[in-house]
Every structure is written in structure tokens, then in C-alpha cells.
Image (cartoon, rainbow, N blue to C red):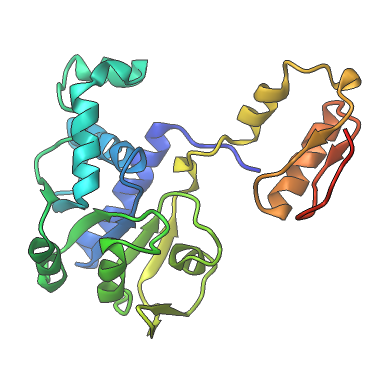
Length: 250
């Protein structure tokens, strides 16, 4: 039910959040991110800031062995990357790396990040913060208001990330309750899901007057309801949001 911002807007948000947290407050930015796709998008955006000379001068870590492997696969098959990335590669042959970035492999290195008091940015999986190393990083930073937990994608409402986005003041991590004192920020524009313009383009090949019925079967009900209204506005006559296990005769 929203429109995604362009890359420059995302870069600006990242720069502002990192500067505010790391440079002004001396805290850490923890970013839950899926290993394949989202982590590389973040690295590309941070590298773009570095190329402009506007990347905040702090340490950056990708704490996920799978993320490193996925990033290496994209390096080796850069021909599959889109045109905008190909353009950047004409002046920078590694768009997923910049000075100050380190990939963390071992569990010991990951644990050491939690003991390190210096400001830094940690990108770690999983994206919904429900599993993986990022859950440990959140547990170790959530109680300090100097820190920021930055959500950069959709989080299922019952996941740890979803509860943080919802504004819960107390969350349960590894069976224990923690007060949420860290700032929680969200960049919705990095969602891999299409925005409503993408979805309208997807159905534009159909003649609304000849389409008997449209089913909306994926997404939260509130968002589905808003998109249903948009479909009705462009001429679709019958747009259904089925209930779970509801049956239809076609």
C-alpha cells in the first residue's frame, strides 16, 4: 500500500541513521538482513555513499557466513546484475566492498563484536531477527538507548523484528524478557515486495471489464483492503479477499 523510494533516498536514510547513532551517540547500528539479496543491496548502498565520500567513518561488519558466500557468487556472476549496477562497476569493480568493511566468519569473532565497545554497524541474518547471529547482537544492544536496531524489510508480526516494529516496549529473546531502550528505525523502501504501482502494472494486461474476479491472497488484511480499493478504482468489478479455507467455485 506504499511506494518505494529510490536508491538515493535510501542512501540518505542510511547515512543519517549511522551518523546519528555511531558518530553522535557512540552507539551501534544492528541491521537484521536476509543473507541473499537484502545484504547485497545494503552493501551496494553503503558503497555508493563511500564513492561519494559521505559514508560515516566507522567499522562495518557483515556477520553471516552465508551472506559472504552469496556476495561472492554475485561477484563471480556480475553479468546478472541490473544496468544501474553495471554502470557503477565501470568505475568500481567491486560494488559490494568498501574501506572499513569486514566479513565475520567464526563464532568467536561474532561474540567478540558484542564485547567491542566501539561504535559500528553490524549487518547480520536473519532478516526478521527470529534466528541467526543477529538475535545475539540485538540481545546485547537492545537495552542501551545509544544503539539503533534498523529494520530494512518485511517482518512477520509475531517475529522478533515484527514485535520491534510494532513498538513493543518489552520483548522476549532466548526465553528472557528485555526492555527495548534502543531506538528502532525502519526503512520500508527496501522491501522486496512490489509496491502498489508495481502490482497495478502487473494486472494492467487484463481488461477489467472482462475479468470476472480478482483474488488477493497474500499480505496483511489492511494492506489487501487498500489495494482492493485501488483495483476497484481502475475498473475491476469483483475483487475478493478470501478468508482462510474459504472455497470458491470457478
